[in-house]
Image 1 (cartoon, rainbow, N blue to C red):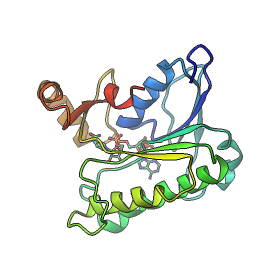
Image 2: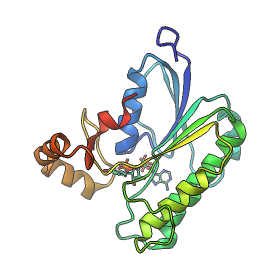
Image 3: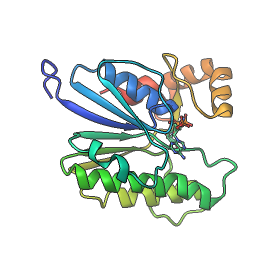
Image 4: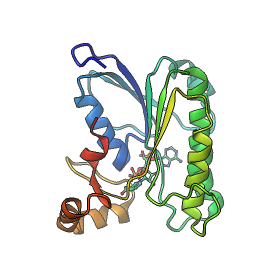
Amino acid sequence: MNPAHPSMKIILFGATGMVGQGVLRECLLDSGVESVLAVGRSSTGQRHAKLREILHDNFMDFSTIESELAGYDACFFCLGVSSVGMNEERYRHLTYDITMAAATVLAKLNPGMVFTYVTGRSTDSTEQGPQMWARVKGKTENDLLKLPFKAAYMFRPAGIQPLHGVRSKTAWVQAIYVVAGPLLSYLNRVAPKYMTTSEQLAAP
Ligand SMILES: NC(=O)c1ccc[n+]([C@@H]2O[C@H](COP(=O)([O-])OP(=O)(O)OC[C@H]3O[C@@H](n4cnc5c(N)ncnc54)[C@H](OP(=O)(O)O)[C@@H]3O)[C@@H](O)[C@H]2O)c1
């Protein structure tokens, strides 16, 4: 990538979420990124010369927007939900089914694409462990790695402290981040393995 000649074309899923907001910020700031296409069910509310948005309502079927998803170098897949209070069927649908539906279309249209999936620390690659969320994330990671991307990376953050106005869409998560802000900053300094920031997570 030559920063003097921005060339990276990026697709971003989950741009309205906490992780996605951080990734969007860093992509827009990065001189090596030519453009960002945010695909979501709601708007980011941002305007930027590099940013284009597609609002889409069926994340199991991308056939109506397929022609707009070709010609990209990288995808950051930041769409995801907390499993708290959710049964396995619902969590699996929102985590595995949606991710695989999008990734399968992207791999078909962009064989040169590098796909980055934001998953979570302690994801269970064996798919056999006791924690439901970890098994589902593990199955999702494993099947993403089988798709014909140029490369696929599974990003497993633990805690993420939101910075620069980044907010979680999940109210209880956002409340924790507000109340525990100073503690999270401290943890980021002394235990960076367990606490990163939205800036560090998304930085090139
Ligand atoms: N936050 C953390 O501390 C943390 C730590 C480790 C891993 N992670 C992982 O990072 C990923 C993103 O988490 P986050 O904290 O950014 O979540 P978040 O703030 O709750 O945002 C979730 C994002 O996913 C989208 N989304 C959720 N359900 C959707 C659906 N049915 N159809 C279309 N879009 C949907 C949301 O879109 P709308 O705006 O339309 O709702 C939003 O863009 C998750 O996989 C999570 O497990 C997060």
